[in-house]
Length: 221
Image 1: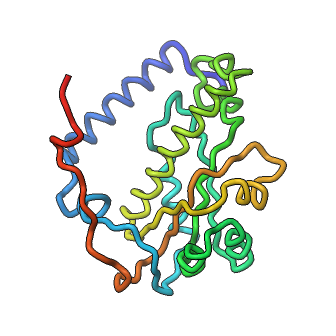
Image 2: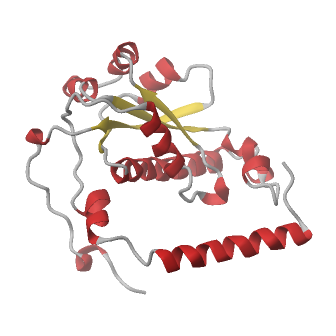
């Protein structure tokens, strides 16, 4: 894919700038209710109702997620939505025993992974400048970029799921090596974390745990 140049590039830049102005004119900020839904009053869930999550909802989550920022538009995240009983049983092999029921009870469990060869797609994702030379042979830079930006995309996915009315519960407590062997053997993908997706059973909730105040963790320079 070749990058636009000249008048075509200028027109695209002007449109992008005006589109952003129009967005800000249309929506100055999210409502307090919207912020409560996606972050402030959102909770991590580990018990689920039997209400199904549709493929259309998962596709919508992805379409929102993919618009989140990543460095150089690398977009390294790769997602496996585990829905079937067979898939759940394969995933259960990797998990600590106490976490298995939490995963098995969720309608969907997303494996958030990243592709260690993401940089080979840069001519498509970042067409105006070929930056593959920054990554080729530089394993540490590849790892840091893939892990950091894949994690960001996993967080975007969680917020996107909440934004369309679903609940989520991110999970560690599993063996990445087992997940990689079970789902990604022979590929360049590496797992990061898991995220259950569905409609929560709120009866399993306990009180929200403490958070640090601004003054405890923030400073000015």
